[in-house]
Image (cartoon, rainbow, N blue to C red; front, side, top):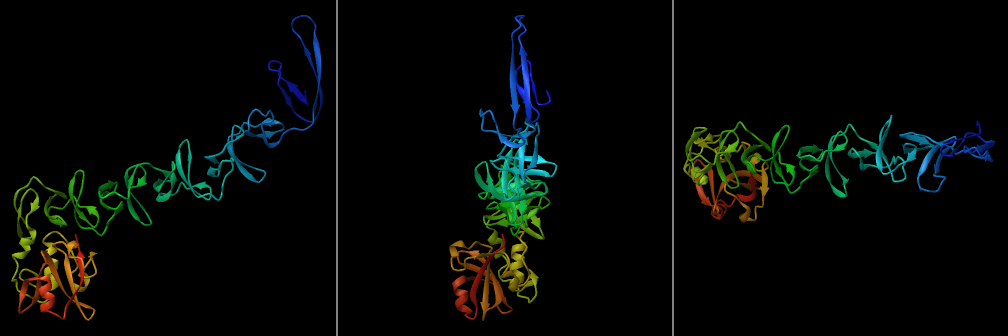
Length: 390
């Protein structure tokens, strides 16, 4: 029995060490029949070996000829293998005391692997073969056969809906991946955000919509504390607690100015600006009591809830650039930038229909002119830029 033992019920033999043993088998039916079997043990399996019976193609971990009932990621012969009840098992993510590991199709840890891998608990991001539990990020890779940018929290793909960040910005996540087609206002735990092309646009201040309504956006985020007038490319709107109030028709006074509102919109808001045609020019001024060119443009946009820099040279480089040569892209409220000798020296407000309004000088004060006429009339200035702040 120290060489080989037998199970009297199943007849299975278990080898223990090299040597020879004689097994005697006796019948129990009273006939006295018996037989003897000589068994020679030549070699006991140790380490990894295919199933010796040949009934499967599986590989098992043996010790002294016995499959070891081990579930672990274990180093055997200098290589780390994933064992499940002693069987080498591949294409998964498995753990040992050192962490969780990417297991390739051969059942081995692949320390060169960086990417996503799956086990019964979900999809995991691995770097150098190891699950990165300390990582929260938006990462490019393939999950469920789909190439995308995936939201990872503590190393695991979330498959959630939120707004999340990586080194490139903040992104709209839908079903765990970035939706680059999203143009909306969406939320995460920190607030509601203006999404453009799947990415939070922190440069945007204006009014934008989602399925719940139209919202006041400041530097990319909904300001629920805002009540007043604000504009976007579609016009100027009456905002209450951060949301356009489409049910309101009447007049309001905001920042000392009186506005007419029809179903939430300030009709002909450019006409509101036009009322200040002829206002006195005053160097350094920023109010209807008197303003210079950049003081006027700053006031005009502020009256519609848009903040822009004070100086002409600042207004010329802030906001978003609009094609100066394609007037079909210009919108009322855009800033027209004029330069002379490569130096910005004047700004004006575009009113639409090829008209501008500007505080010109102390002789002419605030004027409305045709865009082409002004450049001809004041030939030293050249239109060099168009900037949008809403």
